[in-house]
Image 1 (cartoon, rainbow, N blue to C red):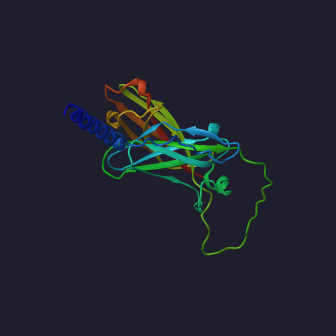
Image 2 (tube, rainbow, N blue to C red):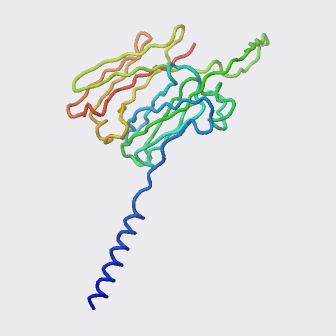
Image 3 (cartoon, one colour):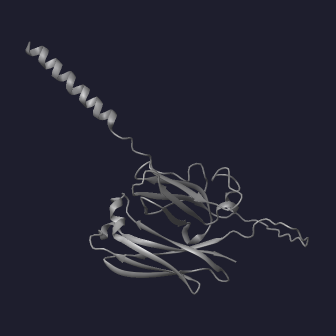
Length: 240
């Protein structure tokens, strides 16, 4: 009888262990935006706060804005976080296409939403490759037509402001000869592991456009761990 009870207990323990193992969530693999791409450098961004309502926008650049983006990947704290990225016209069939050089440029603008109405975090990744030598040829048409293709792609610039309890400010201007069209802010954390999404609720950036610059005024509550390296990206959307 004791032997039967031992066998039953052992079977129950094994079943519980199997159930716990089956219920454990699968961990996503490390992003690899350079997979299959030669001379590629991986650049990982910080953890960007995605609000419960509205969009998060973040610009991730190749080192010193040199080269172009040939691979794109990301991580998120939940599958409720839905992300997309902005490219020049026409949209590429694949970020690994031969046309990536002219379609992406030296950076990618990520946009993320929460599909479930809960705050989350997104970590963008890009793979950058050097621009190959070319012999560009510029053609100009003098023919006047009623319609035209879109002009040069818009440009984007960003800078970051490290935040702490209290008030901070930051500005971002366009490149030389460019006109300011708009701007954005993003709250992010430069840590390897994602902090709690609730931390972002303690950081309050306010964006204004004035005199050709994008300005941000940031009010940060107490209790934001400095070990999470919190910061605010302020960006400018520009065109010649």
